[in-house]
Length: 270
Image (cartoon, rainbow, N blue to C red):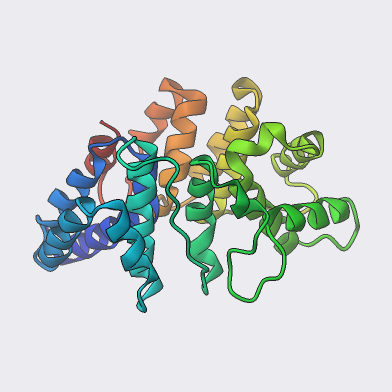
């Protein structure tokens, strides 16, 4: 394997362990570890991930609470939440961490809400913030139709709504969120395209959570998907797209190249 491809694969595997393992079935962690072992620089990471996979709930909580790199803490949290999702950890147990880097928090906080950590929506999850996700959603929805609502505001709103995720059907202002999504798909109130993979993931997850009609959203979704680079950060979009569009989207995936290789993604999906 060329050195450049090895580097891209190693980077993809690290991102999967930190942020995307939760999205996959119960066999996925062993696959990530095994693929790490295929690369010279991944040998140490693969063996370490194998150890982490078999950590108890208390060990994962304890490692997360230690001083250290936030990217390492993400792996402990992702593994904990993934195991909890698949019934390997008691659903009543809780893992928590106040992030310093906001970009690390949104997906893990989304997984926490999906696992029943509803207090995550009310309490700040990022160092220095004074209000939680729900309060931020309220403030941004109040301003959505104002002329000074910016692209930065829109992306902030999408992040908060992604964390709300599985609870969006119960949200009292869901009808307003639906209007936001409909306007986003029409490039309003601010133009979105071209998107990077992280941005498209945020749009895709909102579409999935709202259960938007696939026949109405497919043309625009396909257009946005084909405009991105398909790094490993497109994994949430791939999974959301398969859930929303099935075989018609599968054909599109088979025609593009995903960072780390299409074989890795489909093996993880099982």
